[in-house]
Length: 510
Ligand code: UN1
Image (tube, rainbow, N blue to C red; front, side):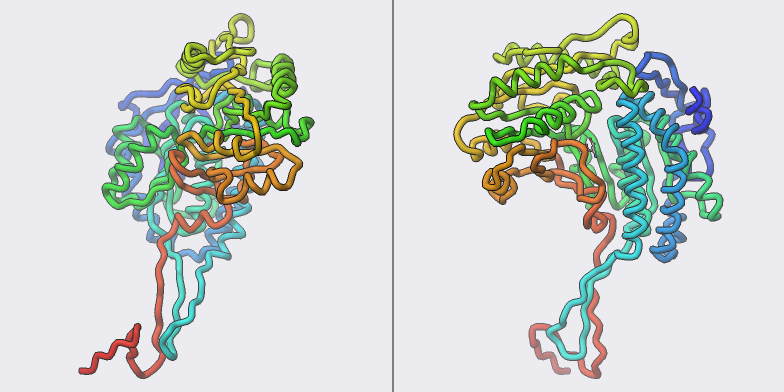
């Protein structure tokens, strides 16, 4: 595996770094990482110790005092160089993402492309961290907003986007003047270590101090849990399940920290009688089986009008029968493995449950075995006819299960079904009818953070703000003005007169 050597992945790797330097703890246990693609051991990672964690946080605090002094466009220049390094390492990093996490190589490369794109976006943004200039009610007074950095930004990321989510947070945080401490998923620490190796040269070439981009690979108590309760970390950005996010939100709020939460989705796609099925069908299939159904934005429910229900159902089942399932490193395969055997069990369990509730399995659902499937992590994506109120349909199962739900009447009925879940991340409608599309996008339409017309639920561009409502957590990352969450806001009023007029015309003579 050439990509391992190129990315500096050894047989045993350290799990804690302050940017240029690895902390050399070897006695706190290791994570042994095997690939879901072939079940083979890849490498191991020494877990960060309590002392390492303290070291990382103290170094990061120190680095913040230097980093925030640097003009934002100069910080942008560092991010520009990181983007260039990522371009250089796109192929091997994409391969490692694919091998360690199991998503198809196309999607692994796509994930690294998202990292490059966010770097470019952040470089431009480094000259645009602007606030408003406001008119004061008092003469010879001026008022404006400014945005200042916060300090340490803690990033807890999930296995499914093992590197892109870090970059959305870390690159925006960096141009804002913050330093980042990253705790990757313990299922995918090798890609995180690779990223740290990739940025190391940039930090060295620019003679930057330790602590601007740090990494802590470890279990909850020593890293994740410690970060949630650590008052030295003013902002926590957490990607994960709603269960994890609820705990994170309350822990961080209890110490008046800020959080950005990107949690579960239960994304629906509506196909109306006026949809162009030529694009609706591939949009649905990619949304449902891409990343083996393990994106937060995966299409989980498809709401089909009764007039076209049978036709869409048959076409989808036929499309599923043509899916190629196999090693993610072979670009001709559409679907790779799930992350681990536990995920396979959850997939099978959800299918059993939904059938017990009255759901009808139309295709897929098998766990694959035999040549090429030795890891035990490959499944056949499933399509199930179901009803929206089923308990299983209301849950996010992180696996390729697509629920077909029939609706009748106007688009408002489909919108009502789509909104009738506790999550609110992504949503889509396929229609060529302007009225249906605009109703879907209106304030009585989709209640999700992302609402697309004639595009599936997944595959958002980095230029938009990414995140969702309700149990998805309300956070926004990446593009648009999501950067504001990484800064503290200050309102400044300046008096350049020789008087002291008080606001609201209050008289106070002494
Ligand atoms: C996630 O699943 O956590 O929109 C992020 C998408 C990707 C990001 C998904 N750009 O599917």
